[in-house]
Image (tube, rainbow, N blue to C red; front, side, top):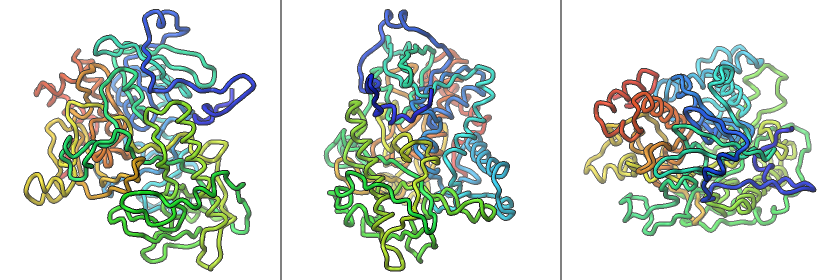
Length: 570
């Protein structure tokens, strides 16, 4: 049967029915009778729901330590942010030398090797130590989603061959069987055939993009923004708002063919998005579809440029370059007619609806409107965007559906920035990682030093970056410091055998803004995979590893031995 992307599976209609699987806001539990009557039961040491970067890293860490793994994924691509969401990696400036796990480095090397071995690169490109296919400013390794998919798949292949790994693509976890503080089984539905499976394991990992397993399993969680009273964070609002989450995005890829005409039909919501002035506080810079935006750190109007034929204009960012994944100059002449770039910009951030806890109908509604926004942005670029020569529109812009692997040209799944978050044994606050808040708490300029967590199981860095939100907040963007990932933030307060491995760890609305990026999600997942390995070897629950100093030290030595850094260099 032909594979289809997740959103298409939700919206496609036939003479029979609309495919609309159950979503994670369901509180249903599987009874023992349901389990016994299921068509098939699959078992492993670990069941991981969600095939994003955290899920893949958790799986690979468990597999290399001889555990068996079942990995479910809603779409037909593993890889999350990098693949089915189409977003090149946002990484810190030291990524080439330190600040990531060895496994993540292996992945990055695999991407470069894939291009070297399979693409007609110029001799100069081949000789670069840190080759960047797109030469984009956002990342030192801007590359195509399909290449990330190919490399991740190659990392998984030995374990698929040995049958230690089962990957269930286009499967949605819909229900959970829970007894007290333990998850006993998950029920998953095949989104193509409708067949159901029961998945059993001693340990379960929620690596979904929205923290889907938390409400299903009764795991305590929080959503949205906490108040200043609750967290004492410098940038927290006065009042809490569980529905205030960051915008999501439906990225797309395009190239430019001079002299071509690839103007898409006018989107049905074009007039709405073309004229929208976002109602944000502080005020947005003007219309959403414009070559300007509110500069995140200052919120003053920042002019931008767009020219698929030219360079940046001084200090003005040319959006064409921003997330470019193919720079034709890196490849032998004639390989590409033009560059290929990904559009995940402020202009197509969707903040008019919240996907967390949405019903299937609400989910589809907001995703479809976000698609309309992205297509409206493309149409505006093709027909109305100002050109340097005084004209308007670039009809040679071509939507590259093949790059995203979809029929409509948009990403297979929304690019999610914020999820449900576990109520953790330890919660990471702004005072731990935010530069100004930390100085305020300690009474001194901490320089480049974040909180030192005795239970660190990884490191990462990104500034605290919150995009415009569903409650009407404009950007919240300020400096953080290179930080650690505390084990306590990966441990639910009550549940014994369920662990988070995505954006659902023990952060706040504020600190999620720096723990949500690609290499940090990977590090979280890898630490979780190794925690399960260690807990199983010691026959303890994961929480006990943190509670016993000798065991914690041994666990940290274990993860060090497999290439995980827990402290930044002095």
